[in-house]
Length: 587
Image 1: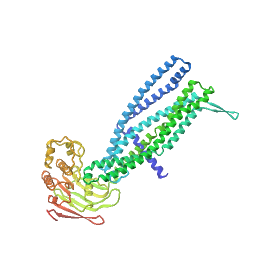
Image 2: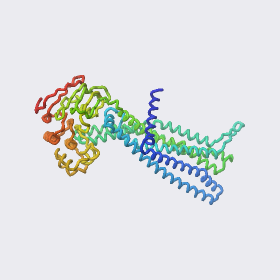
Image 3: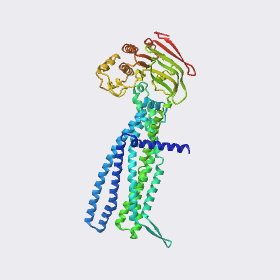
């Protein structure tokens, strides 16, 4: 078996699992089956009514015209209107059940993928670090899941509808059409089921032509989707970093970049539209062809008195229903293509998330809750994610409670990577990290803190989902970091433009959480020196039992620490740690 065929089988298996998971493993599986079977039964009922319309009503009406009988005509029209009304009612029921299933399924699948995306604070992080082939995961979660669920329901119900119609109207046309006898070279050639053969031939032939016209549509649609995502991502980047872009006068750079991306998008869109234009032109020709061919095919039977005029008209209707069912593939090709594209993007994302959940990739041993009160790092090697390139080799450290420590080293020597390893977000490497008490007792402050789009109350309680602090506690924390002007805005959304304000909000969170250990990674780099001094003093005053471990290049923070650790890294990335007592000035 070739690698390609194995990959295709694996992809098919994963796609099947993704589509069936809601119906087999969710808490709503019985409701899901009830809704889906309700859609199927309602669709089959409409097909049955359509059968009655085609088998009894239409011939009845055609016969009324032949005999010129108004009473028969009115009776046939009345019955037809009743059946049409019933079909409209069942069509409403089908769409109602389908929409309910669509909403429930989309909600369940979206929550499942989001849960995996955020699982253990690793998956989304690893995707952003090393999985460059997973472009725009936010679009996959928001848009592609919607397309997969909606398209699957439309395609599956459409398949049932058209397959049933194909069987029913093939039988009806075979009963109505009979055989065609042709005199050729003095003999008679009998073609049984002539109209059925013509209808099947036309339907299959046009479907094959449509397939060859559309076969490159999936690839072009996927390329266009990626181009759209890249353009959207850069536009979002401008919104996120608008202040920085403006102060650096980088408008021309982004203008050139966006214009190039628009040009790429136009090329991809032209390619897709060209294929769709060919499809639309063929569909127009095909529609006209299917209106003419039934007349041409049935004419010899009518001229030789093998069928009556009412059967002639009915045969045309049956013929069109057969070809319509066969042409469903053509008419749904764009939907099938978008479904395949979106399904592939979700399957790839889920496959990547499942790979990240494999504990075998986590080789750094983190032991939590030991009796030893010291936080220790033993024989730690850190690698760049996605490669074997070393960042740190053979690092051994011991932090003692109550001893505030400052870590200093040249940029790029792995200081921030060390903090991430202690936090459990740097997974590539080997070694052992021993953390006393619990994870809740350790808190990390990065240089740029995360401030969600929420009320100030929720921002201060972040990352807790619910705020458990009283108003007085929140206001006290704000006052401690010189943000008392925000005390009356706890339930308002505030956009913090200044990175200095953001860092002070982060320190307010620390004062609320009261951790045993706090790791500061350039957490005061954007603060004025007097504000930095105030924040450190308040931190040590209000949290006397909290041990501070800092990474900072500023000399102004040294006197807030007891020890300074210098990382000396050689060309082999081996770390020699030099420890000195912190004093103000040069060490």
